[in-house]
View 1 (spheres, helix red, strand yellow):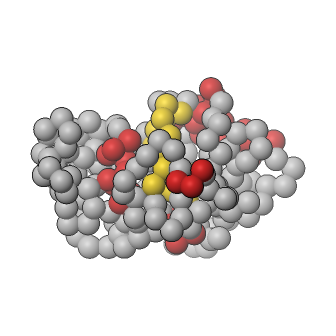
View 2 (tube, rainbow, N blue to C red):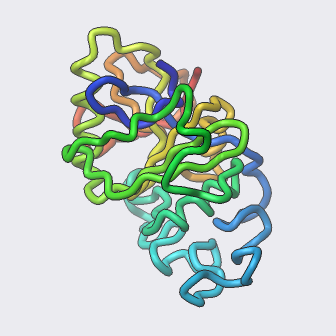
Length: 225
């Protein structure tokens, strides 16, 4: 199974996320590179201009909303608050516009399992992308999510590629059918990290390997398909 498959349930797990795109540039906004507002209205649905951008990060969550500068690796991850804010953030690095509650064409041929059990603490699922499907989930309890992800990994007889996992923010996670998309949000500009719970994970020197919220998992910027 590839890292692109997103969150696991009883049958699929391990390996997901990180999105492609052109996440370069200076301070890309959640609404897309160079755009701090919705293209149609110039503001968000609730009238909050630039909501969820680097200029206004804490409105409804937004990018790095509440993230302390001197916090842990997890506390410094981007925080969305809403599906719209998460999709805008992702769209700054890989195509994710518009986001919908159902995948196009009846669903991805190979993609994240959307039948999340209660243990994952997932509150909402969204789909976006053009040529390949990106799946986004909002998470209520990140520790519960990471615990469930590790439990799925531990339960698998064949654990697959040790260099794969799932890309996470503080309150959202995402996976994609595209390995390029998976890599894009692990760039320093994006600020996301991959949750890796594989017991044989051993990245090359120079890559991050930070403590996650559960023992046996790490947060890393290293990913190899």
